[in-house]
Length: 179
Image (cartoon, helix red, strand yellow):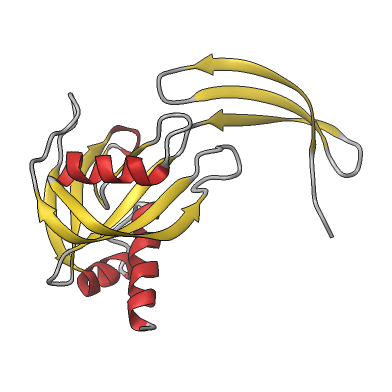
């Protein structure tokens, strides 16, 4: 059975630098009318950058909304209409100071589809060459090289709490296991 909700109207509540919040009135399958709060976001990219030694380049940074420091794959926000691979190449070099000769899609995910339109595009980046890190103003992070198998254990033990990182690490580990 197909499930669907029909949008009847939409009202913008807030427009910021990163997100827009709107409230939509929708008609449910049973004819009932209700509201939905929706966060509009242009999407993002996450990069599993794998070096020749089987280590991923990870970034450790403070995330204000969670009030904690997180270990994550390099990542960044898309500009509206931007090609995800182009953004991935930019973010990898900006955050880690590396470029990659080989790129493979690891798929896309909606991290919080109940109220947020953000889609994250995941990539595997290989054949890494060091260049120069150039962080955005106000961006502070530390780059760490961590073996893939150790990261799998950290994910399974609940030590990596970022969703895009968990998914990228586990997908990559499963894909390499299937070779």
